Image (cartoon, rainbow, N blue to C red; front, side):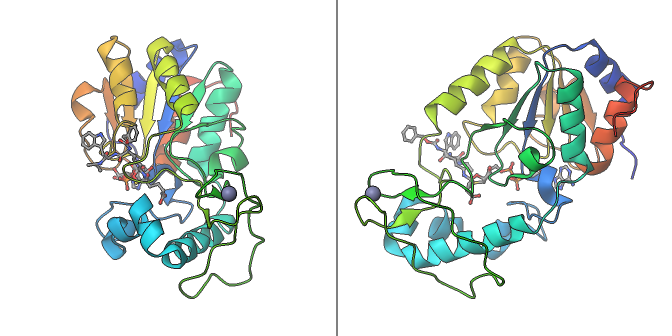
Length: 258
Ligand code: BJW
Ligand code: ZN
């Protein structure tokens, strides 16, 4: 699939930028085989009820159900590889070192794809912590098979309370430092590239709007329309793994950016 939308115009905006923000969601990792949340056939919330798995109350009610589910997801992410979209984001950052990558994703594919320091708004599958005292807990070793079902979480080494996944659940505040850094970057950027997010979950979804309100061009990469379409200077309809490399080539045609 080629990118429908004005790729040359998006390329010109990227060429002219010196401090872009790249804001990513689950669609960025879809071509790596990591499921999104809300896609019609493949999204996690089609098969699992978020109220039973992704809230503090769910963990309190059934810690083994929640811990086993996240262990299964981490197992899948460990076997996934960054795709050309992740590598294109890294190429942008390599070309423009002031680039800030802000992600809602809890996988580690940006890091493995060449962006060492994404701003993480929704935490990480690789940062478990105590559910009572927040003491960081070791990441469990990789098992040959994913858990077949519920799995009791380990106990905190400091206070013995159950260890929880280090992700942000519904009803929880986003990490203050990450949200602050994201708002600041969106306020100072000269281009905001939003990739693979439905832009339905707040406050993360407001990050592109911060830039748009300041008159900064917003370029969106997504196969389908989202609530951000109206504020975008360019909507590139297509998969990130194809559109982002094409965008990098359009911005810097004389460079070999991978
Ligand atoms: C492709 C592609 C390809 C496919 N290439 N693209 C304002 C209004 C309404 C509600 C609220 C509001 N403010 C707050 C709320 C409540 C709530 C919320 O937003 N609810 C809405 C859903 C209605 N927000 C919260 O509860 C947040 N906390 C909060 O507000 O706290 C307040 C507070 C303050 C002070 C003290 C205490 C509390 C927390 C939100 C946490 C979200 N957590 C999750 C789970 C993380 C852990 C886990 O992984 O299990 O984060 S939910 C899930 O959604 C995950 C994602 O990061 C997040 C965003 O999803 P994303 O990335 O956009 O994925 P999808 O699946 O939605 O979209 C994928 C897109 O990719 C699609 O558009 C596809 O088309 C596209 N795509 N293939 C490019 N190849
Ligand atoms: Zn503890």
